[in-house]
Length: 168
Image (cartoon, rainbow, N blue to C red):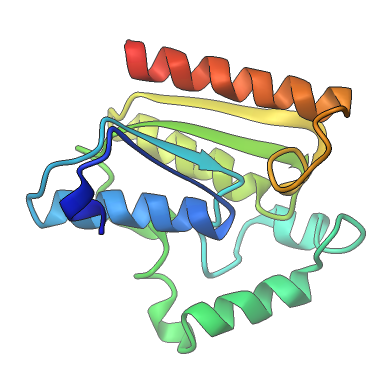
């Protein structure tokens, strides 16, 4: 779908962030036009679940690590295929669109977001990264009450970052 739509941006949170990142890699690898930017909010980029935050934040912060493992098993049933299916473990991130990666401090995926942003920067991809202090996975983006000052402030920062990313 992304190939034919030719959007200015692709965006997603959690598994949607995974899909947005993978769409950009596939488009690049097939020589198709790329969106200008990718916006990845609390993205799942390591289907091996190998980052420390999976165990450190895997209990008591919303969904637990066991549920995350179940989701990954539904997405990529054979553990042997999970490294190749992980944006974080892709051997070459050069040539991808500029990215905004936003993580949440109390998220089992926060280390994946930080690691992926570093890998993008190391590959000379323009990237903005922020870890939202005190927030949970998806809490500030998925169906939250924007009257909550922390969630509203996180939204505003994301909107500002996206605007800067698109206009620069």
